[in-house]
Length: 454
Image 1 (cartoon, rainbow, N blue to C red):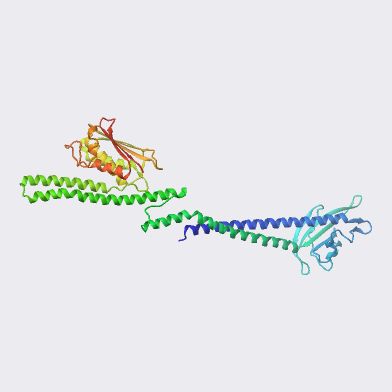
Image 2: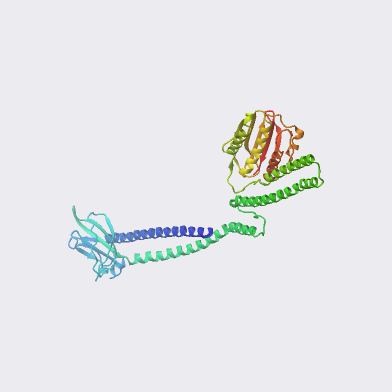
């Protein structure tokens, strides 16, 4: 496949050559028409000259002098010819330049005062000509007129030489201009595409491990591309680092419970004590594993991915939890515009909305509200605010920071592991550099507000 530079150069060259070709044809046609007009004007001037020197003699008829103002008419084979015919087409006068030359028939003009210009193909002993005929009605006596046709002709040789010289000059200059423009065009394209070549080179260096991200500055048209590429690279690195840290945390967190189990088994405790201890430590390991795996599953921002509609996700979460808590007959209300979007991973949004809404359902008496709306952020994309509110007893201020820690619950009597809000906090703060707030809601219960930045 052709490169971008080759495509642009070929396309621009085709357009340039077509433009210069049309320009050349237009100028050639314009010059040809101008030369024809000039030829007609010259021949018309010769007709006027002949009319000026012609005289009518009652005895001899129409008489023209031997010496004419135009010297070429007196030189045989000069290329300029003239003759006068009467109404019957009989030649009554012809210039000396026609001696030994048989001119082809000239077009006859019947109406006096009209000019007729025409290109006439020459005969075997005469070259091609441009002819101009003009008919006059000459008053020889009072109320007595005779009709004469003044006819002049000139060979096409001078016209062809003039047009040929112009064409050679025109196409020579156009060819030179085309070469210069193509060279300039190639230089401009090379200079214009230099940032793209730089991006490609730096991407190859990133793949080779020679650089961590794309360096700036870049032209305005490429900033969105390079920024997204850098964000994608950073996200991939951060995602890999989170997985490594999560797995490390998981392995470290399991060491202590396993050591306790090993110690209990080794000292031959009572069966009831052994059973309680094992059950407690296994539950602790389950909570740790659940927390670390959910935390490691967060994908984070995907810079080059399509945005995710928020309304269908909120609807899916509400429908699922309505079935889970069907015995409590909870009322769900959703305040999310259909066009609102989330610039991140769909799984992260499901994790945030699912945990927040599930937490609200556990404490709600009869109603749970979900709200989502955009907010102006420093980046080129608007941020997203998610609020989940219930009409339960609320969360005391003293416990609001406590329940955000892994394994902590506001009321141990309520089912759960105490990891949902901790997972949400980690996704919001670490992955999306956002904030999570717990406040008193208008319904009387708690309102958890999440701000996500992209």
